[in-house]
Structures are given as C-alpha cells and as structure tokens.
Length: 246
Image (tube, rainbow, N blue to C red; front, side, top):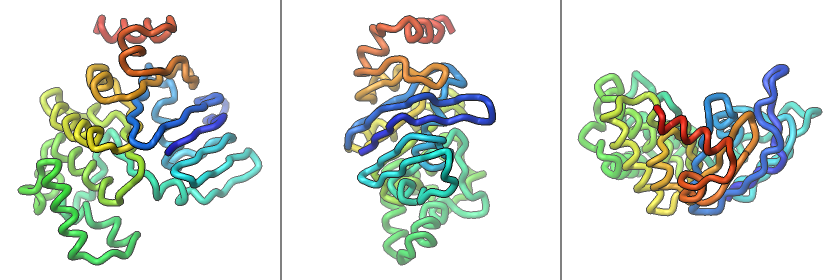
C-alpha cells in the first residue's frame, strides 16, 4: 500500500530525514515512535504531500512520485487522494456543525450529492459515538469529541490509508481513551494506518509493526512486541527507559 525509497528532507541547513526506506502492507498498522525532533511528523507529512522531499520516491496504492532537487512542482493530489490525515489539533471548521464538517470535502471536492453524504456522515458519527452531536458546533464539544469528529471527517473521503499525528497529544488524560478506542476499531476492521504516537501501551496493542526513529533515521523496526518489550538497539532501549522513568 505504501512504499518509501531513499527519502531525504531538509529545512534550510537542517537535515530532518535521511535515507528513509520502508513499506506498509494493505491492512497493516505501523506506529512511528521516537523522541521529539526525530522526524516522525515530517515523515508523516511527506506521505500526505504537506512536505515535499528533496529526493526519493513515494508510492501509495500504485500512484508514485519521484522527487528531485531540480523539480519544484509535483502531482501531489495523486498521493493525497489515497490518504486521510488526523492532526494533533482538530482543525474542524468552527462555523460549521459536526455534520457539515464531515460532508464539506466530498461535497466540494468530489462533487457528490448531499443526501447520500448526510447518510454516510451519520453512519460514521454513529460509529465514533457522536451521532447525537451532529448538529453541534465544534466549540460545543469536548476535545475528545472534536478529535473523534476529525477522524470521522477524514474517513468520509474513504481513504486507502489513515495517517495520525499524535492524535491524543492535545487531550486531557481522561479523554485519550475514547479516541484510542476509535482507532483500535479501525485497526480491527483492516484499515491501513500509520500512527505517530507516544502512547506505548496503545502502540503495543494496535500496531503490527513499530518503527523507532532518531535524528531523521529509522534506527530499528519490527513487530510491536519485539521493539517495545525487547528492543535490540541501545537508542531504542534508552528512549523506552526514559518513558518508564517519567
């Protein structure tokens, strides 16, 4: 479903990603872990075309783009149409109801008819436990409810891949569980996902594979149980020990 080859990314004189190679199979859940500044979010944003690599190749569900220092414009929408992204912040339209937030993109971008979109949106809102809140505005919701609405909105575009950038980092601890439960449900349903997270217990439960990143490089990867319980690399061991000490 996803293949990254020799991805390089810099901001000014700072190298953020170096020689990134990895693949994600259809239906697989991959969690990216590592210290702040290790390149996890940048890697995720490259997958959605929000950041453009200087070199390398990204392929998502058969659509492929080769990046080069010499080229400035790319058909990013060829990749983006395969992905749905959920950010740390919720990014809901504040002037639209929850239901209107969900139907906006397929209504405008895909030119679909409103009636079937409303039905689809209500089914998704029921799935994430928000159907009774469909006519509320974002500022009438809790943080956990807003994040669940953001997940439902991303799913409205029927993406092949869901990308999550620390989806619980902006939430109070008591609201984290309700968001993670939704993601766990998606995993059980076979949704392909790449998740940046600091929730190690969640990663162990939901991920098929875990990638540990540091200084823009994938240091270690493997089955979640192996990486999170018995990592081989010293850098991974040190990172996980810091989380335990906290």
